[in-house]
Length: 308
Image (cartoon, rainbow, N blue to C red):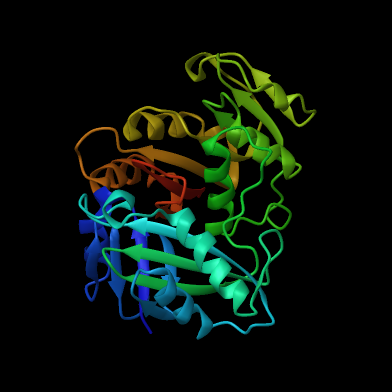
């Protein structure tokens, strides 16, 4: 059973190191024969290849017919990847064209499109003149319309990937460092967590919420006796500086409390270099380190660790 793994274009070498059987299909995209027990840090999307085809509408629709029943409600979501010479201009159509035209062909053949509430979503990854098609249950790749900024999606993805159970772990109080405009704070407040949001900048007007206390200070000027269950840090500074900030606040985090920190890879040093920096700074006081390049990460990784 083969899979497509997708990460950032700059992560290709790291992805291949993690999956020695991988073949590069395009920058940031590899194909693997199986998913081993390797801790997959650098790819943020994984698609099982259910069927392959050429990239014309008819070939794609004929392939889709092999994996869905005409009675099911479906939608198609397409992505076009490839080299600089392979793009919507070189092939004469874009991903939306494939979604619409393949959908129409299937509808004419008796299949049932439902964009709002499909029972299956068909993912079509077009990569350098070949289509790799995946069937996924439900309405996949739907994001909430009411959000603050990209950071909010990163926190949602982190809670999901790291399996953070707010109720089970008794997470009731959070410190959000570098909070503005408030994406992390907003998502935590929606989960019922009371948030101290530290940032001299303004928070989004949506954050008029009893669960969010905006403290308009720089983190360097902040002090408190409050004990938190989770500390989050999405500051746009070097990872070592972020780690030092977390270390200074360790007495304000309960034992077995959680840290979620974004590791910003903001120059040409490797991701592994920055991961090692953060790990070495924090390892005496924290454990259970996990790193992941999430779908809404860019030149960055998300780190989780737990206070000893």
